[in-house]
Image (cartoon, rainbow, N blue to C red):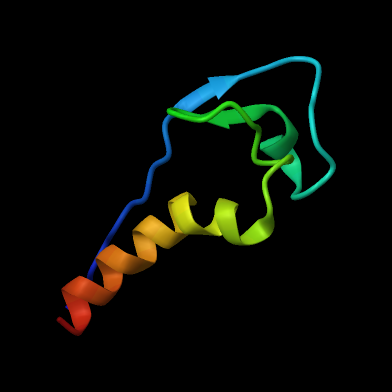
Length: 65
């Protein structure tokens, strides 16, 4: 069987970039409900809401739970 899952984080872009953590668009992206970019967040705070975390939770639910 094939399982496909998707994680999303909605938000907005800001300019100029803020923060020096992460990579890619992290210093430009502010998730909905927040006021700091992913580049400004502590890694644990970013990871708690990241699209990867959401996708892996869905994958776990589909395969294990």
